[in-house]
Every structure is written in structure tokens, then in C-alpha cells.
Image (cartoon, rainbow over all chains, first blue to last red; front, side, top):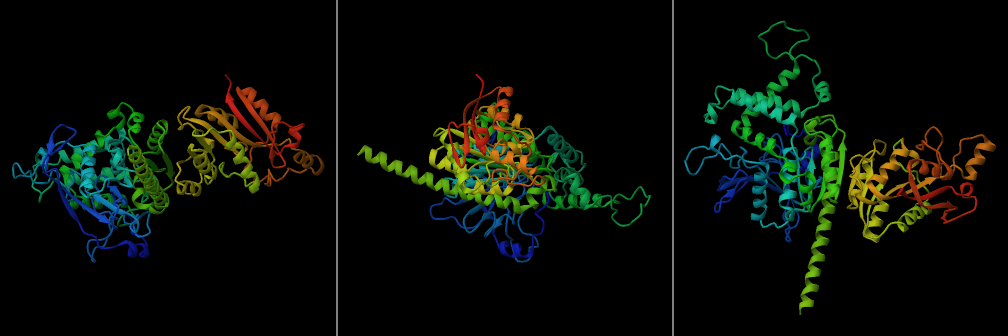
Amino acid sequence: MSARSQPKSAQTLSQSAEIVEKQTAILFSDPPLTLASGESIGPVTIEYETYGHLNEARDNAVFVCHALTGDAHAAGIHCQDDKKPGWWDGLIGPGCGLNTHEYFIICANVLGGCQGTTGPGSVNPQTGQRYCLDFPFLTVGDMVSVHSELVRSLGIDRLCGVIGGSLGGMQALDWSVRFPDQIASAIIVAAGHRLSAQGIAFNAVGRRAIYADPGFDKGNYDSENPPRFGLALARMIAHITYLSEDSIELKFGRRLQDSDKFAYDMPRETEFQIESYLHHQGKRFVQRFDANSYLYLTRAMDYFDLAESYGSLAAACRRATCRFLVISYDTDWLFPTSQSRELMTALMKVDKHVSFLELKCSFGHDSFLIDIDPLSELIGPFIDQASVAEREHVTNSHRTDIDSSTALD
Amino acid sequence: MSVSNRYQLPDISVRLTDELIMQHIDNESRVIDLGCGDGRLLERLRREMSCSVQGIDMERSNLVSVIQRGLPIVGANLDEGLQDIPSQSFDFAVLSQTLQQVKEPRQLLTEMLRVARRALVVVPNFGYWRVRMEVLWRGRTPVTSSLPYEWYESPNLHFMSMYDFRDLMTSIGLTIVKESPIIRGRAVDRAWAANLRADSAFYLLEQQR
């Protein structure tokens, strides 16, 4: 959700850091997309990237859903000079958990985002002006509707799997319930069927920081002069929720930034290393993210609640037909293991194929972006088996078709 | 040591217990295997009997093995109970050579019959004559083929005989639908002096009606 995956060993980087290209599609030109709020939007530009090759049968595609502030650049590099590969580069590549020799991986920027897909920073074709807060209210379901249409537009009937962490996991879960015929498996990492009240509270403080920035101007700020302080503050707060007590202690402790001794100087704002780190995170975030997008996307996350939408979590799960892999982290307090367990119980209650594991990792919620190996170890065989079952299923139903057509003759 | 670390019986016994368990499971039923190891039994249940299966184990390597077989598995410690498993969501709950390794066997047995209609349990028999001889003549904690550990490294926390097991069933209100002593690698329906001659025993349990 926050930090890009940590630099990997030189070997993995050279193996997987292939040059990839941004791609765009224009969807919902006519008719437009009707959103959960009842409003509609169209056309929608969607930025996406793909890794590996789509096979002739078009049955080897896997969709990766990014988290709150992620983007379509999940793996590889855009040019030789790129210092950092995509945010899940360790997981996606030749021989990796999502093996690009076998699978065709798609990752798209979400609706409402600010990295290529239509969002509040885009120009409203009806007015010629940027949408800003006139952008329609959107939900996790709306993001998934756009992803789902993108997959269809690529000529893919069914995905081997949909995978995502955090807000991406919510998308994968929503997908399994709303478009069950489109996916054979869902992998839900460090996520849940709804955000806790505590999570909403942190989002609320982040939004307040943006609203309260004098430069916010009801969302009509000049894109060259955004509400920097508010957005940076929102990021600092959110970033704390992505870490764990242990990881902060280990990485920074009470160490001071520039000296061994306290300065006893009130105007000096950055004295501890953790302060410097958070300021740096805030500053960097402002360079790549739009404040209005942040408002829309956090709201979408707050609204997501599968139990509420379908009466109960089990009722929601009943609609799914895919197999599930649910993974949580022991130090994640934004989406604690108890939430993943709740999901697992609901899936089991309605007799779904579900595997669940809590991984141990000290990095808190961000673990899913950092500790890639244990993820790969589970995801690789899970996707392989889902795709094997899928092919067997297709062969069998094809046979049944032949049988029934013979019977008709 | 972990609860899921079933001790390695000789192959013949593993095959025997698997067969024994499978004989008491209906085709196309829903089965949960507690401490399922690498999922060998689960795979046979699915393949040969079209069962809908679910594994539970706590070793990550076992999770990977079971996922590699394309089967569902939940990573959980049986000592922490089955509270996340919905009630009566299975027809059969299997616990093979693991009961003696959990901290609260009584609680686990009760839980098994909360999540499933019937429980299938294989336990070592501490009343076995070789175990008794070992204690009586050599004054040693027994290490036998079905109790193959030194006392300090044994994952086995509880030792019970067939008599003890029956007593426990009475006290927690479970019915023994079937008891099969396992004698020299064979499960029998009835045997004289079974508590002396069997190195382990198989039980089919139900909630008392």
C-alpha cells in the first residue's frame, strides 16, 4: 500500500526487470458506465500494463489489483535508467510466484486514480475542465466493473486468477462475488471484507488534513499548486498504519537524525529518525499522488462492506464460484488476521474451496509488498492448480457438450 | 514440537490407517482432516471417493504440499481449537495419530463433533503389552514402534489406554459407534484382551443422542 517493494537481490532484479510499456484502453464510450451511486461516467480511459504472453486459448491470464496508492506498474522497468522496478516486481516475472513464462499478467490503475486512469484530475469531456470534486462518487465495485470490462475488451473470457493486497484484496473479493463467471481463483492478501472502524478513523484524519489545507480550495486547486501539506500529512498518518510497532522500533528506535544529543530547540521539527522518515514519505507522496484522488479512493475503501451489501458475509460468499487463497500477516493491525479468519469461516460455511494462512513477518500491513518469498511459495502452486482444474473443467464441459449434442442427433 | 507433526508410522501402518479411515467415510461426503500432514489422505478421499475435503495443519511446508495437490488447507494450531470452523460444516472430522499430541484432547474431541457429524480417531494404546513390559521390567519410559520417541523429545503429551479412552467418551458424552483395535498391523472388529494386544486403536465417534 505504501512503500515500493524493497530492493531485491541483484539476481532477482536482473531476472525480472524487463522493460515494459504503459498501455491504455478507452472503455464505456457508449453506453457509459453506471456507478453504484447511480451516476454514470464515460468514456473511461484506463492505464494498464501486461507481463508475459496471452496464449492462443486465452486462458492463462491473471489480474493483479493494486492497493490504495499503487498503480498499473506492478513489474519490470519503463526504461534502462529506471532505478526501481514495479511495486510487485519480486512476485511477477520468469519463474516467480506469478510466473510470466506461464501466465499473462495484467495490472491496471483503478478508476478514480491519478496514474493514467480516469479520475478527479482528468478533464471532464462535458465541461472541458478537470472534474475535481465533480467527479462522481465511486466504490470498490465500480473499480472492479472497469477492470472486468478491460479483461473482456482484451478478448479474455475467464481469468485463472485475480490477486490483490489491501484495497487490491477487496477488489479481488468483490470480483469473486460480482463476476463469478469471470474468475477461477481469488487471492486475497492482507485485506478483509470491510475496513474496520479504526481504519475509517485513520482515513478520516487523512481526509481532514487535506480539507483543512488552505490550498485545497474545495478541490479546485491548481494541479501545479496542490494542497501539499494536507496530502503529505494524510500520507504520514496512513504510513504509520502500514508499519508495525516492531518494524518502527527495529528500523528507527529512538535514534536521533543528526546528533547523539537532544538539541533542546523547539523550532527544530525533525529530531528523531522516525520523524525524518515520515516527512520524507509525505514529501515523496505529494510528488506522485493527487489529493482529490486520495479523497475518493479512501472513501471507496471506507464504503466497502460485503456483508452489508449482501445481507451477510456468507450470503456474499455464496455467490462466488472460484477457489480462494486468503493470506494475512501476524503484525498487520490495519487488516488483522481476525478479519481474514472471518472471511475464511464464511467461505467454509457456504462450502467454498478455501485455503488460509497467517504469515509471520514483522513489517505490519506492508509485509505483502516486502516479504515476497513466502507469498510466492503459496501463490505459485495455488494458481497452477487453479489453472489445471480450469482446463480439466473446460475439457469435461466440452465433452458433455459433445455428448448432449450426440444425444440430440 | 508441533501438534501436526504426526509421528512417522511405518508405511504399512500409514496405509492401514488411511484404509481404515476411508472405510468409514461415505462417498461424496465432506471431510476435514485435522493435522493432515502433506494431504495424502485428503487426496485419496477426493480422488477415490469424490469427497469434498479440507485440511488443517500448521507447518508451512505441509500447506504448500496440500496446495500443490490442488486441495484447500487452513494453517492452524489444533491447540488453539477449531473456533473458526463453522458448526456442522462437515460430515466427518479425521484425527489420525494426533490426539495424544494436543494440549486439550477433551476439548478437541468435543470441537470435532461440533464441526462434523462423526469423528474418526486413531490413537496409540498405552495399555499395549510391550509398553507395560518396558515399564515393568526395564523401568523405562517406553519407546516402541507406535511410541517412537525418547521422553524428552516426544510430541506425545498424553498417554491413554483403550480403557481410558472409553472412560473419557462416557464422561464427555460421546458415543463410540465403532472401536477397532489395531493388532500387529491389522485392524480387527473384536479381539480378546484387546487393551493388552493392540498397539493402537481406531474409533468412530458420535454425539450422544
